[in-house]
Length: 427
Image (cartoon, rainbow, N blue to C red):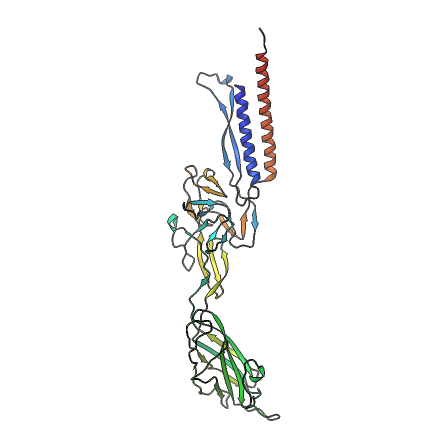
């Protein structure tokens, strides 16, 4: 009988060493949770057995209990690296044919070629859909959806109206009548103003107005006059803008330095086709409010009504798990809210590898929710949770398990020697 008692001790110690070795092997595995082997003694008895004379029959492994204590938190520069402080698991859906749902504490996420947020195995991070204000619009298992980072935001609109109010300088030098305007030659114009406008596809292009003083400046030594004329040449990119076929417009300022009624504002340019290949567009230029003063040239106001398509510039995750994308046009778009799961008995979850767990009858069904609500853990962005294995503690446990194995091996050897002694008895 002592053979089987010692054998049960050897098997239990071997299981303990295997569990500890598995813990040590995963000391650097993100989101890993260590296990602890638990034992129970074995007693064979009946109602007729004197409790004072009962002898145990060895040990049995009751189970390997997972320890869901938090691991060390490590800061990263990736906003999609997420860590849970407290209870909770990220909900993942596989991309294979099974389409199964699993749970993980490994929050190292990235974006795949289809703009889906995935983990290292390619499984989708599940979130709840939200409205433009970030409010969840669907809950429960049926409300879960995979998170996709959109690349652009907004509907493009071609620029149709440009308003530019400038302050001309009445002391600016008049260009001679022989002057030939060349936009590449700064000596052929007095001042210029550049405005960013957009085509029908939201592509940006620069509209430049070149101002050339043609009348009004005084000769040397003579007090400057207060009126003047300016020719304005307009280009969109490298394309000259024309008004009824003419490549310039002329602005006239009266004796009070105010812009005269001719030409009427706004000025409508002839329709043109952008070099980008976008649809033809027509632009109106409004110079209302422009003045002529003795001070230096200045731009008082500049607006346009075109809208660009915003390009993705960054992603942020709030403490409540709301994922937002920011775009180059200033849009901030809520994309979803991270779904979390918790279990009544997390130690009953089945480990299936790759830092995944699946629900069992022991763990109970998952209760879904979001961060910082209803007892779920808090969410931290730019952080990942490392393994909760303590190397020093595991090495000490390994030494203890080895000693237990050696002690049971010695007990087995002693039982063998006793049996051999009995066999050698001669009558």
